[in-house]
Image (cartoon, rainbow, N blue to C red):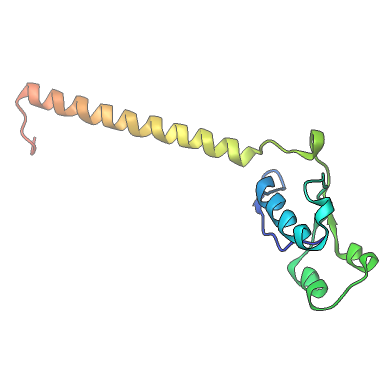
Length: 126
């Protein structure tokens, strides 16, 4: 089955990022109508298609062998096919923490400067 699913991409890791619950919901919706006995079974994501190649299968039936010619296979996966993170995610978390620390330091410095100015009798115009 070829889903019409757009995923996030991490250029640093060359990793596509998709939410499993979104894929599960798409598969469950489709198979509940067409093959209810397979709903809830395990599945494997084998690759991706470029949108024009995917569209060919929407407009007219395309043999599986021909569709496989357009498939971009996954290069590898972690244990049980689950990837738990990538560098861009951890970098964003670290950058956010650094931003929070920087903002707190600026507030502390501004507060210290205001306190010092008040103790020295400076006005706002210094």
